[in-house]
Image (cartoon, rainbow, N blue to C red; front, side, top):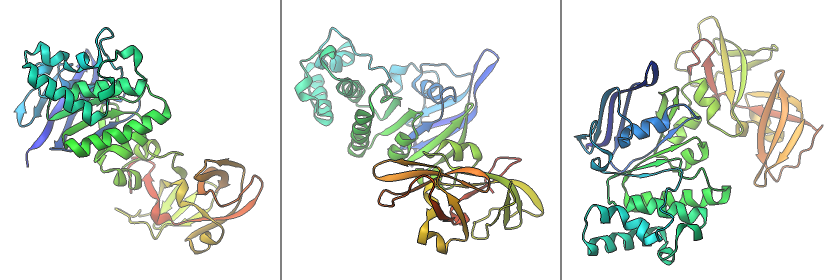
Length: 360
């Protein structure tokens, strides 16, 4: 099957500064892909290159099998939704939705049909006669999405569209965007720094750093098998617990001398001789009480801080001379100063080379 968007050997320089370098990315028809990373990693820059808002220094961009590298944005068959709603304040919602179509000279009947369809999909029919000043933030963002929707294109580009909204609205609109994708089955490329958005929305996530894609995989793989220390540390809230030490065969020795048998870990390449390594364990993979009894690694610890989160509870303690976070069910009653038995299975963790930072 032909890819919807194909980015081949793409580079972008601002003077002597290299922003994107030899980047390749293939996006399947109907796929929802998220470009994820911190500010300055190149994710919005890449999106702007796909949209035609930035001229690339080298490489090619194909959309629907057509080379669009040097085409104007309007000729690329894309619809774009920005972080800022960018609505015309003097126009009603209906006029905002139809403006681009009217400028393009489309027939009135076709415009009305497209606006009506977009309004129905986004549930903004009652808002068509209002102006942006009379809309909430979530409603304005729906209108901004609708303006892209009426173009009836194959590829939608979203540049941090939910960043200006409060937490509840972000959560609600995430669901709406997911529903939109399931209904339309269009290709969607979505930029965000929010890992929750990435994990909940994406078919695949491209984690970026310094203009380079560190890992491209489905959310389950990104979360459970991060390819390097950067991805492991960036994905997950709270962060993965990282133990620095040495690996000799299947024995990991932490900095304070604590030994952990990592024989249950699925090695790509077990170490030969002692080598510096990092063992990463997710907070939810550390268990306490009776559940710890059957774990390959067990230790006694004292609870330092407890943070009830409603559905679950986070707690901080010390393992192998290092501050550690673990997550437990909210029904489990724990408190500061309490002595507990903790355990985990290293096979569910991640091992990284300290030298290369890559997964072992």
